[in-house]
Image 1 (spheres, rainbow, N blue to C red):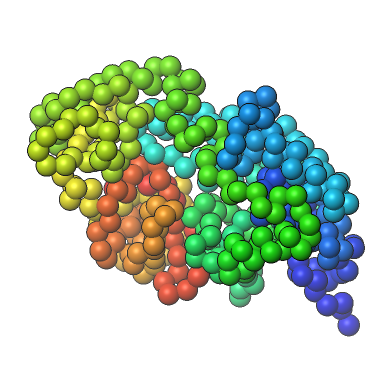
Image 2: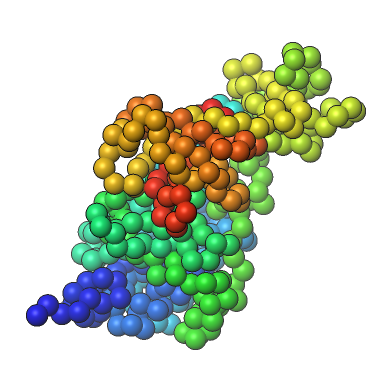
Length: 377
């Protein structure tokens, strides 16, 4: 008779199960590490230094700052497991920051946290975990991994407010097999903080991070201008009908759907409907010009079983999210190639911006079917 499965799904005692925990220094990943250590697992904490440490020490409200590295180390010391800091600064710059800047220059609205999960945490760090002979890697993300007929499935978190499935759609089946998300079943953030107090963690009352880690105070434009000085080239603000309404100080200061701060005043309110990097134009129009029922998507990661290209040409009904803060909407996904598709929304959505993610969900359930990147809304 085989031994029962432990809480991480392995048929052996926790003490014989090594788990690498990706520790950001925040309360979520700290609770994961503390809980697994308390359950008797062989825990190894790993924190990534993703950008300049000197600048990080003076920065608040971001997930990977210098003081956060210190906090992660303190939690490891308190709970009695080893902790390592890995310098991934070059990997992060090459895989995330450079593309972030180039995407903005090209008129897109990128989501660097998804690329970081995809290219750094769930690729490079995951391989490091395997090099450390870990059985699995655990993170503090609010998402659920459930057993399915064809293997592990990705599901939304039990707490819809905290659900991070939008940022994890590009997790591959192979990565999902190795990953664990111990917080995904919790009903509220207060439960996480209660656990932090239970374990006496110094980060129990630490505020949640808000900013993208390398973007101080949410100022994307300042970061991009520093990385790409040409990004501040001026240009025209143009109405959809061709009228020039004003000038701007660089398209990096604008995003699709933006209304405030256009500086053109007068008449009906205008919204940014498109950014044209080639002509350096910010194109504006009425609010209804933002609505679309058809979205083109590329680089699709499919988690629904089988090959994406083998879906019926007529498409299948799904739900989609085109922004992390919006509810999912009914739609049909139709493959147009091995990793490309057209999304037909039942009800038009506003502000489907190139560079944003479009995440797929199984209609009527919590299962994440994958997703891709919007090329045209």
